[in-house]
Structures are given as structure tokens and as C-alpha cells.
Image 1 (cartoon, rainbow, N blue to C red):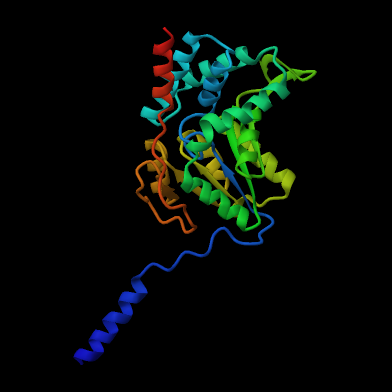
Image 2: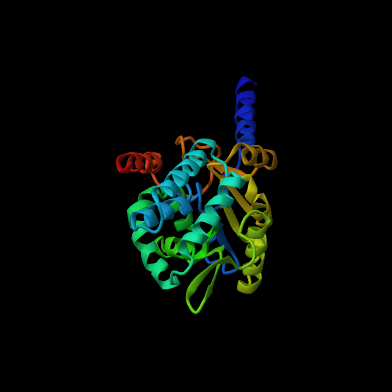
Length: 284
């Protein structure tokens, strides 16, 4: 009887183990795609601030503006969330800086700035998640409030399908200093993803979305496979409540098993803000 009881206990214990997660993403699913937020999800820090540093280096604006960019970037790093006032100031500054410049000029400069400030700040783990979707034959899109030209450069350099971003108005290839519509932020991201899915013939219940910010809960809620990556506190609580998958590359800990490969190792937090402040002090 002792043997039978032991065998029964062993059988029950294996039944209580969680079943292995199904392979994801599903290979060959033409109706599935992945949507990735950019700032602090794919890239450490904010793309717009890195872009501002590159423009400063090329004398697009003055030292006092660099100090503002550095402060906004420091806030973003320390708080881990987007401050609406800072983001609005950054957008207004960027629009005034590029006004009168040609779109082709900024695209070319964007390629250089990517190499100088952005390439080393891509989270290896998130990059691996995107590559898993690409390897499965799925399209992968960046969805960001950053200018669409910057987003397109980053998407192309990472080998992604494309990017949705904030559109700055241009006439005859020259920036006017105005936006076309509103910044692609919060609910606007969800609307853009929904529109793209309709145009591409995608089934959103089979799609995945990745973000660090609670502002993107509308986008994450659209898809069947939402992921919280480096989540802020509000998104972490929301994700845990709804049992969304989480992963945090800032400390190297895994908040939950994601079920698809992640690159080994975690890049250290870049010192871009410190460098900008140091440069500011040297030029004073």
C-alpha cells in the first residue's frame, strides 16, 4: 500500500505542474504581426532626446537647448515614465529646430545619429523578441510618438518591417514646423495599430504588442498577446492583474517566462545624459 500511495502521489504531482507554453510566435501565421513601442522598450531612453543630441552636435540649436534635452532625458531615465509636459516641450523644440530643413536632410542625418547614439542603446532582449517574430515570417512594426522619420531609420537598421510615428508637416519636402494631426501617443497608437491591421488583413487576436508604459495599455489591450517590457509601476500592476507576460531587462530579472528566446546578457544603462551634461560644462 505504501508503494501504491507513493505512486499515486507522484502521478498527482506531475498533474499539478503547469503545462509548457505553446510555441510563440506561431510560424507561418500570415495573419499575425508584432507591434513594439520604442522608448525604453526597444531602446534605452527616448529616441527624440538622442536625436536632439545629434542635432546639437551639428549646430542645429544652442547649448541652452541641449541642457533642457539633458534634463528631460535624465527625468525619463530616473522616473521610468513619460512626463507629458517634458514630452510636449521636446516635441515643440524638435519642430522649431527642423522647421525650414528638408526631410531628406533629416533622414540622412538620422542614419548618422543612429550609429552615434542609438545603436548601442538597443535592448538585446527586446531585439531578440522582435527577431523571433521575423524568423516566424511575421511583420514587425515600431509604434512610437517619436517622429516617423526617426522611427523609420531605426526600424530599417534593425531589419524590421516599418514604423508608425508622429508625422511632421512638410511642403515640397521642407518641414513647416507643424504636425499633421496629433502626436502618436496613448490611444492614438491603438487607433494606428487598428488601422494598419485592417489594411494588412491581420487578426489582432493573433498579434502581439510590447511596451514599457501604462500609456500604451490601449494598444496592448488590442492584441491577443500583450507583453509588458521594462514596465513602469502602473503597467506592471495592470499586467499582473490581467496575467500578461512581463520581462524586465533593466535589472536582468525575469518577471515571468516569455516563452520565446531572449538574447543573453543585458546592456548597461547608457550614459548619454551624463555625456551631454559634461559636454555642456566644457563649452561654458
